[in-house]
Length: 313
Image (cartoon, rainbow, N blue to C red; front, side, top):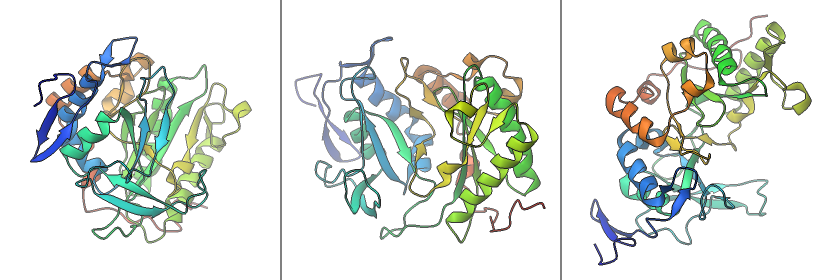
């Protein structure tokens, strides 16, 4: 390390990286610093890295903390160290008019610490991976983003998550819940498919079915006027151009909350939304005591999602 404790040069698995402004407060409400952000990600790296490996990363950076301006960053090649693996992905419809971007792949601890040092508080990844030479694979995860419209809360999200779980189970899939780290939840299911459109179409069918069966609780359309007091099942997250916050990612909320996997018994017993908020310190304790509740998502044995899955007449 250098003589400056706030801007040290560290060695991570044989790679040299200069950290900066470690005492800078990024969460003013709690005084949580950049150094603590880096420490958090280094601590949860063993459970986080398998879920982001080979998935092109979209960084959400907060250089002046959660109360300051932020920006998404996809094209990282201009400032990434040469040991950060990047992959060139087409970006049709980019707001910047770019045909492609060079995304970082967070394959190891050194790359994860590098992203945290950029004040990239949130890690967002797609539901598909790339191969060794950068080829885009078909989606291997199905995701439902459950977003409550006030006065609905995470409690109502839990009820909807249970309904979705039952439908998925009936179609041969297994569902795994996690908090969003914000006000909602996400539900994941490992899949395999031979068409990237099938997950989105299937997720839409399930969302629309629950909207029909539980019209006072569920909405499948984005229209804000329809969402008051209901839970939006955002099936569109399965669009291959979209990303979802990664498991074990921090969120840019007033407190350093974490998007973390849940046990179904926690979902079933939830009667207060605060039960589903976990700070960085609490998340580290959960990982230490429970390990990775999302480990089943890493299995190579995945059920096939076909074009007609979920068509029940």
